[in-house]
Image 1 (cartoon, rainbow, N blue to C red):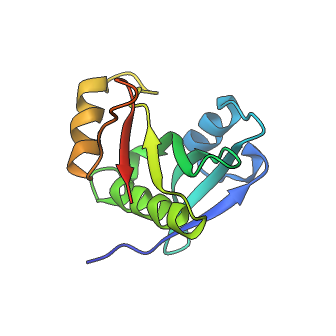
Image 2 (cartoon, rainbow, N blue to C red):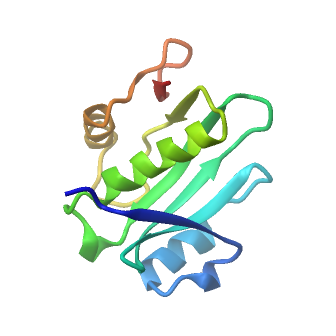
Length: 135
């Protein structure tokens, strides 16, 4: 069953209902190229995602992704990544990339690399720490 994810851009962490997602959004950096989103599934908050869209670079970068802890292991994180890929294509990006760094205790970089690899990401030829999907 395909999960229907909606990404809604937020301007402030105050727009989140989930305490966990609100706290993450509040401490997430927001340079000019970064956009913060709440991921919704059936109108319920399921994740926070920060996406960098550098102008005239042709790629989108997932900067941070955090699924609500009580909603994990249901395929929601994967569905959010697929929605980010859809967004990248709509923006005319040629690839989507990320650096798999844990933002919570209990998760290792190796676990993140394995998870993103299962979603189709490969190590970049340009930068060792970067994972990417080229369209």
